[in-house]
Image (cartoon, rainbow, N blue to C red):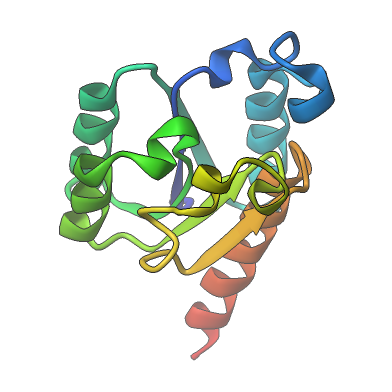
Length: 151
């Protein structure tokens, strides 16, 4: 059975491709998810993607990870990065390791975007690599799982 990797996309990421393309690029969320699923197949991973503009839906998805054999999470909390104690608490409660991903370099943007409620819990943080950041996270996770399997 392939290890399950959950990808969680926060609010407004459903608008990728048309939303502020100079900041977020022109790749759509569907294209990112498709690329991740193909890459997951190549790496021997099962990739499940979820996007919601609603905090409670994302909390429910994260809580479900405690029982659905999710091995790792890739999360782009989007605007919830700077506001959501609820998502942070859910990730802490399920204790599934995760990589925090941001499409833009948050350190080159408004000051409020530099504060993340997640980074200190994350196993890794990738910022400013566009859609490629998700693929980098998946490669990193595959390497971690392979290394763990060998020890």
